[in-house]
Image 1: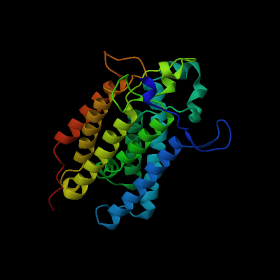
Image 2 (image 1 turned 45 degrees about the horizontal axis):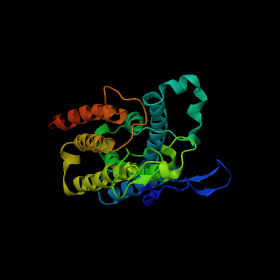
Image 3 (image 1 turned 90 degrees about the horizontal axis):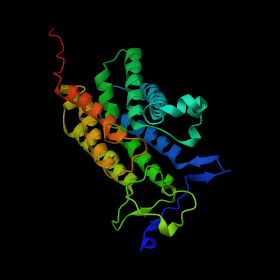
Image 4 (image 1 turned 90 degrees about the vertical axis):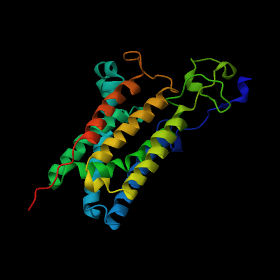
Length: 274
């Protein structure tokens, strides 16, 4: 019966030059996410919905890239593998071994946007609203890459679309004895990526919220991400010890809910009267 399920056998490499060297889908996912963000920011500018032109967009994306990479990498070790970084600090530099945390990436982007806003003498929230409408693209590609890598798989199940992930078994376990699991990476790609992207684009183009209430769209995105992340976590096998009885992804999402509520409920600052 178990052999009726598809056995995950995808390669993490698009092109492979040696055992550990090549073009990985995970790295390509980040590239596609950043390229998509650049395209959207140019489109916003051409439509008159963003003040940032080509030169400024390049600078903004540079800040975002560093924020995502540094925040995601540091966040992974601090939030999920805190013991490892003390035991082997050089593991932080071995990016080819994987290990990124989306919650850490959010914190990294926060500091990157603060620095960008100060350098260019612009308000923080209008910039964060623009980036919030693009973030789901990177989340989508990242989750698809997680599935291709066979990592962050789901809990054991017998649904017809379950997948057998060889990485979930101990060494030497025959394939016919490996239990099928939820392809939770694809659930999260749909929820955190496709659904959030469609919603953010609808809010951006079909409302005037970015002009009348700067920061609210950012707060809404944080709230929406936290909720769909917690939903996805219910199908996902915890990849670290639990905190207060819940997965770490769910626990850290509580802070995003708090931050999102603050931004959604805050009163917009009215410009001074002439």
